[in-house]
Length: 227
Image 1 (tube, rainbow, N blue to C red):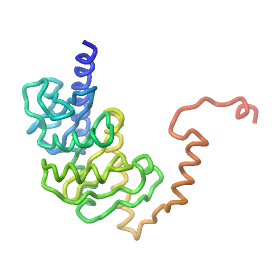
Image 2 (image 1 turned 180 degrees about the horizontal axis):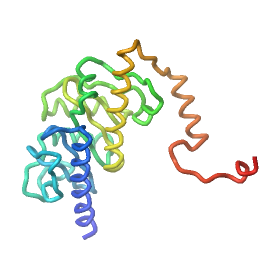
Image 3 (image 1 turned 90 degrees about the horizontal axis):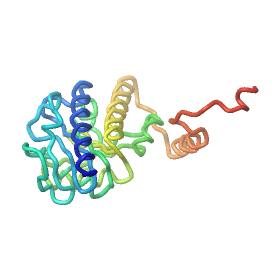
Image 4 (image 1 turned 90 degrees about the vertical axis):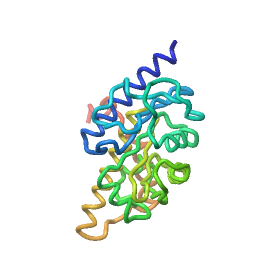
């Protein structure tokens, strides 16, 4: 009973994320897919669906192990293997695949999106570009899984993006951050050669973030009040 309730929530979260990604211009028409895992079940957007119109009832549920349909009336996205591969290899709670315009453009020309801003460390650092493979194939899934090693996002050569998180919000945030970083790189490249944060600079950012609790709300200390 508890799992059934969680799956119902997951279907709603997936549908909501799909519509938000469409509204933000990160997916267009049927190009993109979203999924969320609950136990051994994965709620995932259906094949051929316009992401801007997806409802919870449209979201199908499949086995996380073999993709066997468990609930819903629509067939899952053709990128089912891609999603299941990320769950199996990286322990994700949710996965987002898009054809976000700027990131996809860079995926057509770069071998790696270098770390040009410290916020990219939230993605794991420089973003790899997975070698091209035909959509919906085991080869694409394997290529993406490998590119995600030690990362939460990757570019898919001449195709798009893949990102994951502990939950749907995390996967969406990683997708948004990747598109933002791609846009910054693209704009900087119009002006010159973008500077890249080397390993020492990236390590210093991590140390500073840990020391300051960066990214999380905190209360003002008594010491700060008495200054």
